[in-house]
Length: 184
Image (cartoon, rainbow, N blue to C red):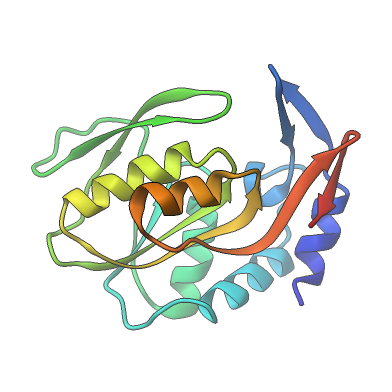
């Protein structure tokens, strides 16, 4: 299972961002090439682990967008993008996020109190982005049915679960050792 995802992860190049070992992969970066078969595999596996029916899929810009798109097509559920840009729409919610290599504001629009939602993102590593977004969704009084990160790296999953009380489902767990991605 997840043959294409695992094969492409093992071949991922590693770049340093300060002290952070960042792997470059089609799911997390859109490069070197995102093949339809990989997206289909991820959408299929994700659709089999989520709770339906739900009202909306929520993803985080930028690398959650292609995942939400593929999952939306597969499940016929619309999606909302948590953006890095403020739009000043009625009901917009600002979220501060901190990752292992950046920090900034995100903005949530298009969700209504009581919506049944799931969050999908490319990777949970430090847990900073996912924790911030989930806390905001909880404060908005949404029903969060599922939280999915395609790739798990580091201890971010445990941090998110401890800080939000929500279970994070992942498709594959990786570690970076000796300049290589290893499937754990």
